[in-house]
Amino acid sequence: MSESAKRSQAYTAAGVDIEAGNRFVSRIKDMVKSTFTPGVATDIGGFGGLFKPEISGMEAPMLVAGADGVGTKLKLAFMFDRHDTVGIDLVAMSVNDVLVQGAKPLFFLDYFATGKLESGVAEQVVSGVCEGCRQSDCALLGGETAEMPGFYPDGEYDLSGFAVGMVDTPKLVTGKSVSEGDVLIGLASSGAHSNGWSLIRKLYSESGLKADDTFPGTDKTVAEVLIEPTKLYVRPVLEVMENVEIKGMVHVTGGGFYDNIPRILPEGVAARIEFGTWPMLPIFDWLQAQGGLSWPEMLQIFNCGIGYILILDADSADKAMDLLDSMDGVEAYRIGEIVDGANAGERCEVIFP
Image (cartoon, rainbow, N blue to C red; front, side, top):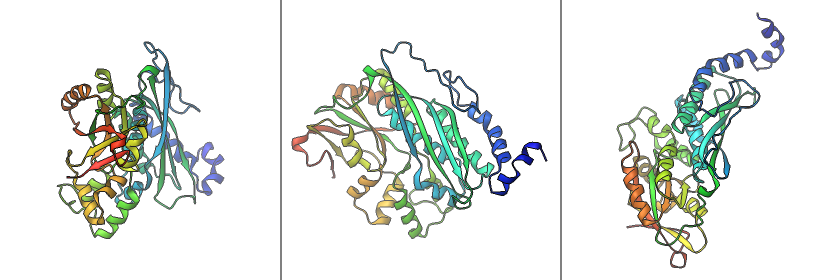
């Protein structure tokens, strides 16, 4: 037994394996380094992560920060024993948020807490975090792995994440200039992302479907459809920003269309959404039918196939659509317009056929 192991015997007997934690950090080092960008000025294992941002050419750099988790979608990861995608969810929920202000994500920090550290599971989770960081061109700068005996049920863990981005203040996207006649462009979601999972789990448990069954309307298994990770919008949105002016942006998360779109609208205007201007993913058709929900109820809870929204003037919208249509893996749709608030029943009004 090593001297280090001898010194930590009492803690190990209490349920915290310091040696296992150290081995875990050693095993993920190369994985984490694969996310490093030129601004990273530190190595793994320090008390704090160092990052030196590139600010040349910026008039007034501003930092934008966001924090989020994966929520009860984790329960399905435990149920299906599938842990390599929830890390992508974790990164996406925060970096998509800071992107709304026009910020380019710089770095990400993660927090992984469990009752007993299972290195194989934890590595799968971190692999997803690293993949999310690579897809959004931000560095996994640091984080925390906490082993907390008796705090979590066996085989379970919790995740939270924190993203920091930067934008030049004159290019900050606030929504203040949104005006009547502007166009809403919706970017397709990959599924239910990381919202509404308490209801999804309830409906799934009542459905009789099994993880390996084919999900209705698809050629994928139930587990594959339900665990599909949140889509990252960083690269396509930043490319659009380089070419046209975006007046406002929305990350469609908890609260769906009705709660999220009004958050960036100035007084006096409303958003009018034309339902049916984008294809509905099978998971939402199934949820609507399984739960006996109306589509207004669905749009209050889920993204219903649109995970991110851009608001632009009509000319800029044409250019943005051309650009988005040329990108691999990006599906974009004109889903509505901005109208006079006095002529709308709600700040977000959905028109059904």
